[in-house]
Image 1 (cartoon, rainbow, N blue to C red):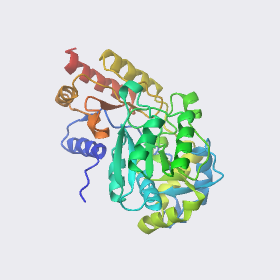
Image 2 (cartoon, helix red, strand yellow):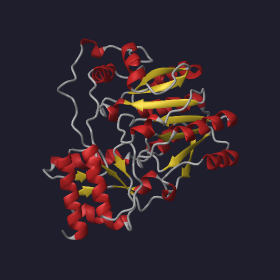
Image 3 (cartoon, rainbow, N blue to C red):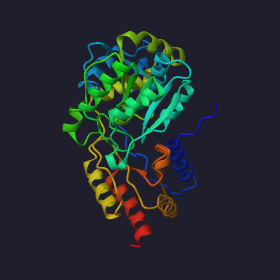
Image 4 (cartoon, rainbow, N blue to C red):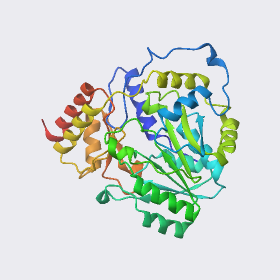
Length: 360
């Protein structure tokens, strides 16, 4: 099995390598926000193992901090070593080798690789820019009839488009899953980064044994390096999920869980990005790029006339971009634009890019 390198982590490696050579590279597709290192404290229990399902205190706080809008009556909250580990454990819990997994695109590229190492076959299901990247139930139903897939995985809010799926769609998807027999995995790792609160509050659906929900402390609490996540797991699958995760990792690392607990207890959430979002929207509009208005996450997914030319010109000003082809086969003229960085830094990057694009 041959897996590709993470394109997002590769950008980070390039930036660090440039810094070691006293050079500056800018990324307009990945986040760069300060952390709460000065607030998070060490703890004498950092060197101890926690229960396999996670620290009980963290689990209790997580129920309200991350899953407050969900009906948890038939699910258990289980802590894992990051969203990727949680997704892998879910797939190994509910699939057998060769099972098909639908990935609505544009989508986080790691889903493809996680499916591969879980011995599943990913099937890309493109959504249309002209339809605001919305999924359609009849297309999902047709795809099931054609492929008999076992699972559908998507992020909500979506990475990279920022689209939020409403309760009408999610309820319909639950009903279709229960009727057809497939499972739904919702990755809501950006649940605290919401710009349309009304849409988000209406984006939760009823409980179902066909539903798994993954959330993360990485983006919501600025703990990307800690690698700790939480998952709503149907009671019938909780033991097997825990055993699979325990076999690989024993438990999520105690230091990461303690940091997450401190962050939740002190409400150390990601700071507001409203000004950055507005500046980004104005920049996209000024460049006359087409885009779908985002409702959550810290990304836009604009469409250009010629992405290859844009990427080449951006590179001339030491600016790195992630092309849309990384997120699906139908998005070669798109790119992911991340506004999760200090406003002053964002303005520097926009000015540099504007100069090379428009000669200003």
